[in-house]
Image 1 (cartoon, one colour):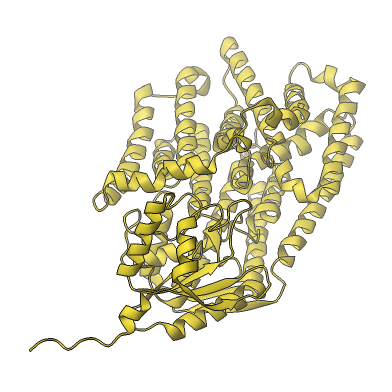
Image 2 (cartoon, rainbow, N blue to C red):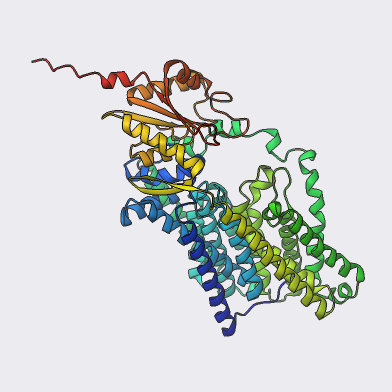
Length: 607
């Protein structure tokens, strides 16, 4: 493992320089791409509309479906209440959130890495994950519950690291608050937070003498558990005071939707889905051997030409993979892609195994436990816990939100452990230069690719709340449909946008008249449910249904799901306008038969 890092004063100046440089890079990128992050359709569109929906008086779970906890949307709605109902408020908040995540990641890395490798962690995260132009980026993600989950998780990790180093109860109480926030933000981050806090307390109980813990064990349990329970209970109570529990559970745990989205091919349930994983087993053994090389075995390892050759071959393999498959690099230091888990599981498992082995050795010998060993246990443990869903779920679009902690172990492997067994100082320096060049080159490559995604022709899409600057192939048909519907709507009439265009309501300045913000695969499953939806549209005087061609492969509206609703649109409604031509994004406006009821002159009231 890496040697303990005492953070001398000279390093504090370098830390500030790293953070200042990172902040400048982030601000420069944000200025270059301002308002270009959101996507007008799919999950990103929901994240545009939900905070404003709350501001307009709608209640989560009761008035619209939402799959995640209430923390992120209500916090964003609070920001709008405090600073104005403008998209720019949310853009600033998203930027500050990314800055906070980067700062916390750097602080966590500095508990086990020197300044240079910790800066490399930050650089790799920034260039490979933070600024992606799709719903899996950090500035405008598929769900802010995910990025808030990353934020709270990293803050929890730092709080536990600080408590392990100082023993101050304040850090443990802070960790408890963060556990509570994680639980009511997103389920998998809540589960990871609870498991990490529980494992930390169990470790404190098992190794109290070696850790120098003071006071009765139950005091630490109370200091952590009480704030966690109080935080989660308070937020849950605020929600349940206005929305009943069955309604909340139906929204955040939709069993029918999950059943429809799950299939055998998406789960690691058979040997065929694991066949690609065997290639990475060598990494786990490599981590075990290299980390152990800092003990009594070090001299033997360093004098073994086989080990040195293996270490060099490992570096060459990583470099070759990175240079030949840059499109898969993000998955190399994360948790896989499609049906393979990827190497980071093996790296983190190896680190955790070495931590457990050394803890057992120290316990048997009655020696104090090094703070760095505890820090590596927390980092590797949380890295595995937060990515546990990928062990079971093969479709791994969530890699960007699982990756940050794994980057710390990757950089340690490449910058510290592999070079440690190469023998001579010259070979170690050459290795460091190779790795620095590789990181800079790959970072520049990914940065260039990311910026290129923001450079095609763009058009502003504007409404009462502000502007999104969208790629022209999306923005132009969206603007045209907006203008058409805006001109045609009369007082008392409403519109429904489908299947995943809730942003249409935001820019139109009209609220969604039905509970379903998204008419997507897994909702309105039966014909009776779809007929009921048509009845609710009648009651809401829906004049137009705006239908896009959005869909996942194998999941098309009217073909693979909601056939009854699609058949009604085709038979009972009139297509009055089409936008987008043959482009990738097309919109059709249907006029419903309900419009005639509203447009007829009102009868005079009887005298």
